[in-house]
Image (cartoon, rainbow, N blue to C red; front, top):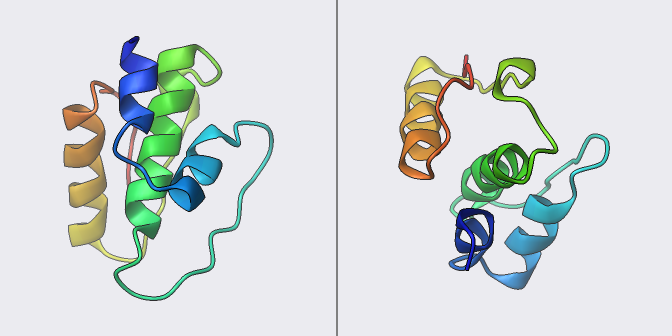
Length: 86
């Protein structure tokens, strides 16, 4: 199993659909606690690990400084560094 495949392993089918949609923008509409941030961070990680995205060309934007910090931590844990999150 490649590291890119490993990123998808813990996702449910809806989250996996988000993570593997690498062409164009994706809108994720779901309630609180449903795994939106998880799906988005896994999409970024999967895209970088498969070579579809260059880390320096990705910007993860969220609403709070705390959430941005959490996204950076999650991306590092997934093996992707260098993606700015604001």
